[in-house]
Length: 406
Image 1 (cartoon, rainbow, N blue to C red):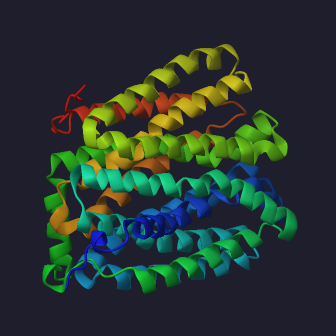
Image 2: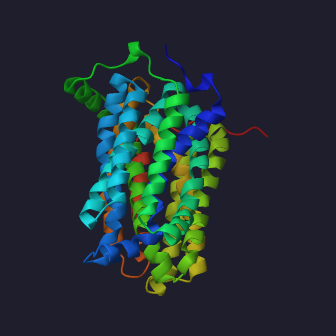
Image 3: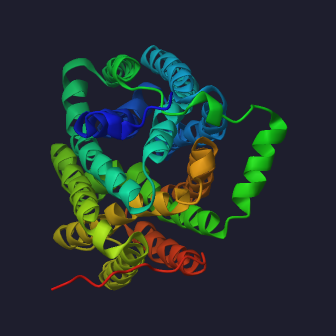
């Protein structure tokens, strides 16, 4: 029997899925304050290579998404999530007891592989019960709850590192994974009915991939999501150096990082209210223009100050840009998933994997270009947001904006 998410407490549903997704953010952000310490303790030859602690996680995440979606369409959502949690926990143990930087990277890749299940299948679970603007609204609520984690993660990581060292951050991730695993197993019903499951075979998966690849709307918004996530990933990889090296914020790094993250959460919450009235397309286009305009204007003082503008001005730009990014995160994924109701698992996998694989080299270029200033980051947002706008406008989806009644 197909049990929809809206047949039980919507509040618990949102909080539980937000917690599942938040493991991605926690795994990304909790050790950011320790990147320099990790580089020293594990004797990394090039300190700039510490950004691989972040990018390797997303490499595993991208690869994992290719498998979990099709498998969940064939065998159900819950069994695939269970296997994913086991892989994530193994990755945490490998990273926790690492004796070398290579071993740490292998652990991070395993963590990324494991995270793919909870992250992607949670989107498929939402799509099993909701579609269109309703789905975007639910995803915005989830993002608003979820954003508390990245806002607090560096501060939590900093506290854990001070008390127990950087390895303890992986112990924290291990505990989060176990708790989330148990909660999901006990409280989340299966949302994919047996009679709607796709028979698993390479041929069926490939035919599904070909079918999805022909859907212009899905392809356009998936590429746009990857282009937007690219500079954001570049920011995550460079944030510790920008705040603590370029601007010498010291222990206040976690505070400023959290303030920027909260802007995404506020935007996601506001988006959940506006999307039902204004539509996903309308909000997406205006958010993209917001990123482009703010970044292009900020580029002027960036060039005039050799890449190191006043800190207050950098924070203003970051808040405006991340507010727009918060609007984009929920809407771009919902728009890409909208035509894929009959193959939500495979669709979520393709959307997630392709957008992540697009973002990885973009984020890597921005991180590797760090020379002490914010120029690569700002230019990244200008260039890639402009490219995202081109793909959104070329997706073929017409805006369904409804003029609000007065």
